[in-house]
Image 1 (tube, rainbow, N blue to C red):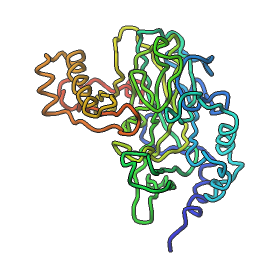
Image 2 (image 1 turned 90 degrees about the horizontal axis):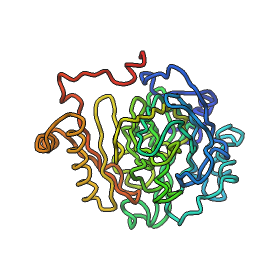
Image 3 (image 1 turned 180 degrees about the horizontal axis):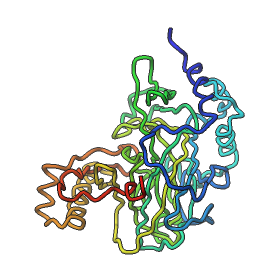
Image 4 (image 1 turned 30 degrees about the vertical axis):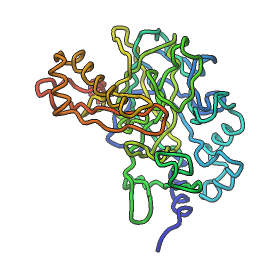
Amino acid sequence: MNTSPSLRILGCVALMLGTASLHAAAPKPPRIDHHVRSTPENLAWGWLGSDVPPVYRVKSGDIVKIDTISMGGMRDDNYQEFLKGLGIPLDHPVVKEMVAARLQVPPSGLPPRTGGHMLTGPIYIEGAEPGDVLEVRVWDNQFRVPYGNNGAGPGSGGLPELLTERETKIYTYDYENGWANFNDDIKVPLAPFMGIMGVAPAREQTLRIGSRAPGNFGGNIDLRDMTAGSRMFVPVHVKGAFYFTGDAHAAQGDGEITGPAIETCMTTVQQFIVHKNMKLKTPWFETPTHYIVMGMNEDLDLAMKMAMQETIDWLVANKGLTKFEAYSLASVAVSYRNTVIVNGNLGMHGMIPKSLWIKDRTPYWYHTEGI
């Protein structure tokens, strides 16, 4: 007998009344120094910037627990009916946060279609100055609700002409097996990550920028490899960095072709480290198995060209290769993937395998933390 989505969610709700973490093998933080909650005063709707006071201040090295919420499915006037139809009680604490955010957080004031994500921040990192590099270590990502949603409609996604009306797909989670339920026969592996991780842009460019398009400040990168155990390096553009995160995803394919992934609410645990001796123009990323470089441009071909150049520059700067050696190694060993095609600035990323360096076995960061 098929079980309806509502009944499956009801079973998950009981589980989610406590805190559940998907990846038991993910690095466990040695401590939590701060907890930034997703209350209306701590949220920014659809923008990153430095034109408001920070909602929280932390020090370099601090490990911060950050609650985030997604407004997916709650953007119209029927949000109560939407939740009731899923079997989610309206007095669930995260639901209360979503409702409060929808009613109390002001929109960005920026032009339409430049943003729409509900972000937590800005967080001020003491000691961060323009020209520095902020390292963000992802210790953990935990679900806060037992479902996520994906949608598409006319004019959206990579095939804007495909559909004639807006449709939404609800995914429920099976934590025991580690998947999201597409239907009784199709299961999507859960791989939670934050779609947006970024700092305020340079003030000579703008005090506030929409959350849709990523840039050299990070932002809506939507790099699905940024699960627990990964880290990001991003240039700092303003004093204090003014860090934002949100746009939580339960799972995503490269490209994110409908526009959203499985949008959900998560708590992320991240550590902030300020580097004074690094020079960086564009964010790069690291996982236990790969170094990842980015190319971003409104033209996908130019994004690919940027990703190739970033690969060459990274290998020259970090591994001591000549330009030709880096070019050759990139051609034979680096895989290039489409990060996302729907964010204004389109993304391509290069996956540089760590296994190439057979004599360089430097322990990864969470191994140095006693894990």
